[in-house]
Amino acid sequence: MMAIRGRSTARMALMSAVVLIGIASSVNAQVVEPPPIEAGRVPPRGAYQPGFDALHYDVALTIEAASPVVKGRARIDVAIREPRPDDLWFDFSGLAVTSARIAVGRGEAAGATARADDGRIHFAVPAAARAGDTLHVDIAWEGTPDDGLILRENVHGQRSAFADNWPDRARFWFPAIDHPSDKATVSFEVRVPAGWEVISNGLRSDRMPAGTPSADGVWRWSEAVPVPTYTMVIGAADFAIGNVNSCAQGGRNDLRPAGCVPISYWVFPQDSASGARIFRRADRMLEYYSQRFGAFPYEKLAHVQSATRFGGMENVGAIFYSEQAIAQGRLDEGTVAHETAHQWFGDAVTEADWSHLWLSEGFATYFGMQFFEQADGEESFRQRLAESRQGYFESDVTDLAMVDTTAVPGNNLFALLNANSYNKGGQVLHMLRGLLGDDAFFSGIRLYFQRNLNRTALTPDLQRALEEASGTDLDWFFEQWAYRPGYPIFRVSQRWDAAASEAVVTVEQVQKATWPAFRMPMEFEFATTTGAVRRKADVSARRIELRFALPAAPTGVTLDPDGWVLKQIETG
Image (cartoon, rainbow, N blue to C red; front, top):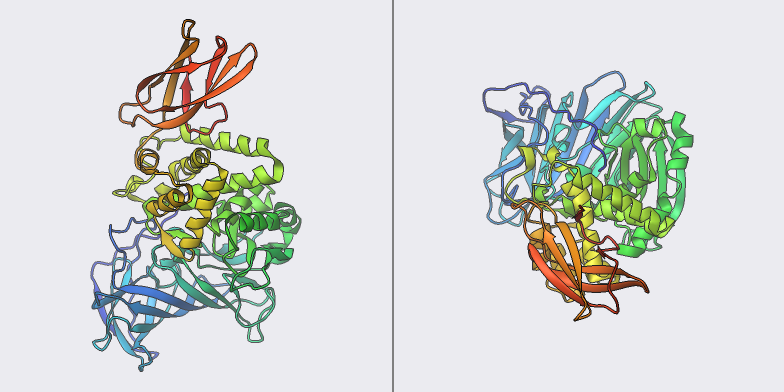
C-alpha cells in the first residue's frame, strides 16, 4: 500500500467476562459478541494458528443504503493439521454472532458452542475430527462494523461500502484466521441497494458481466487462488466502469490459457475523466511485470476509487485507491505502478511474518520505480530512486533493523509502514542488482517468485534464490543490510604516491558506533587530465587504505559514481 493517511482504531468498549453460549440455528438463538479490540495489534511470536489451515471463505453480506448495520454469514472450510488441537478460533471483533454450526467432512452440521474473548470466537473441535479432516463452520452475524468495512458517504456525498483490511482488519467484518501466513480462496455474495455495482476479488461466479447485477440482485465474485485475508475485499457504490485493456498480455497460466488479463477502472461517475487519465498506462505496467517476473497471478485487474485510508491498497485483482486523490486528480502513476507490482510481491508471494514486510513494500517500492526506467528512461528512474533514498535518510527509523524478528516498532503493526519497509527495502534490492548484475538479479527474483507463488516466504527464501541464481554467498550482505540498523557514512581522502604511480585513497566509515561497519564492493572514479578512470575494491572496515595504479595523478575521486550503494558521503 502507499501513503497511510492516519490511524483509526476499533471502538474500545470493554466486556469484562468470557461468554460461553450454545449457539444453534434457530431464530431465537442466544447471541455471543466477541469484544472489540484495537486494530494493528502485534500477534504473539510463533505459528499463528497451529493445527489449522483455512482453505476457503464463502462470505455473504447484506448492505443497506440507510443503515450502518450489516448482516452476514460465512462458511469457512478449515483443514486440521498435526498436532490436532481441541480449540478452533477465528479472529472476529465487535459483531454479534447469531448462529453457528460445525461439521466434520461430509458429516451433518450440528449447533456449535462458542466462546468469545479478546477479539476472537472459539469453537470446540468435534471429538470425531482427526488430523487430515476438514471442518466446515457456518457462522451468521450482524451489527455495525467498528473498522474494516467502511460504510459512509463518498467524496461526492453518496453512500458507499468498502473493505479496507490491512493489516488485521478483516476480522472487523467477517470471521477469519486473520494473518498473512494463512492464505485461502474466497467467494463473496453481496446484496446491495439498486443502482450500486459491486467489485471484488476474482471473477463473477454467476457468469454475469463485471458491471451487471444478477437477476436476484446479488453480486457473486469468487477468487480461485489462495490469497491473504488482508487482500479479501468488496467495494460497493454507484460506479462508472471503464476498460483500460480487455486483453492485456499478462502471460499464460491455468487461470488464463490465452494470456489475456482484462484491466478496468471503477470510479465514481463524477471522476470518470480523472480515472481514464490516471490509469491510462495500467496495461503497460501489468505487461511489463508479467514479462519481468512471470505470468500475472490472477484472473483480472480492476483499479478502484474507494474509501481506503491509504493512498493505494493492493487487494488481489481489485486495487483500491484514495477517493480524494482520484477526485482531485492528484493520484500519480507511481502509486499505480507500486500497487500493480504488489500483485506479484505481497499478494502472490506473501510475507509469512509481519516483521518481513519489506518483502512486500520494499519490492513494490523498487519495482514500482523500476517500471519508469523501462517506460520513461533511466533519468526518471534515477530521480525516483534518489527521492526514495533521501526519504530514508530523513526518517526516524534508521536506528532500527529493516527486519526485526523480535519486535515491531511501537508494538503496533501500523508502525511497520515506515521508511525501512519501503525506502530501505527498495534500496536493498537496488544494491543487490548492482552487486549481482541484471541477469543474475532478475533470474533470482523470478526464481523467488516462482518457488513461492501462492505461498508465503521470509527473507532467507529470497536470499537462497538469489544465491542459487548468482552462485554468490550473500550471508554477509543480508546480515548487515536486513538484520542490522543504519547505513554507511563515508569520509574519503586521497593522495598521490608519485614513486609508485598510485593513488592512495583512505576510506573511513564514520556512522554511529551502534551501526555496523559495512562491507561493500565499491567503484572509485578518478578524474584525470586524460579522462575518467574507474577501479573497483572492497570496502570492509571502519578505516581502510587502498592503492590504485593510475597513468597520472588524479584531480579528484568519486566513490560509487553510479549510486548503487545506500550511503552518505561526509564532506569538508
